[in-house]
Length: 126
Image (cartoon, rainbow, N blue to C red; front, side):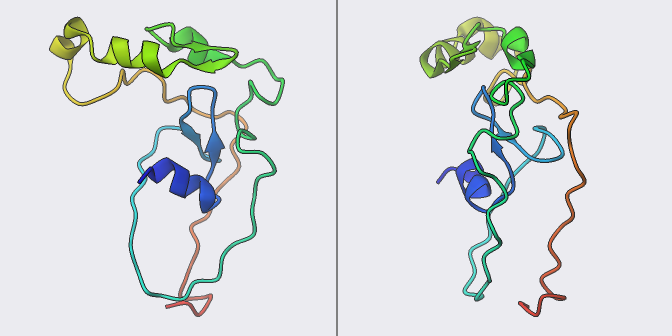
């Protein structure tokens, strides 16, 4: 299961040019899941387009992730996953770090609006 796709479906953010999830507070975040039998009322969809938070797709010509990608795997057309995987899997990069990914792409989002956590108690859902 893709946590970022679940986060998008829950209205927590949209996708970027590099396929990462951009929340109203930015990209540097972690997502987790909880499986429950609680009956929860779905929130209204916040976004009209799955790339709405990405300035590049909003024709504001950001492109910061294009410049920061050490593999050259991100262009204005999108994210070349094969080129990215080749770079991330390279022996040189593997020797330099632990974990997966290049760790150079999370960026702050300048247009961020405050995002308040949902209080389920006040909504009578727990």
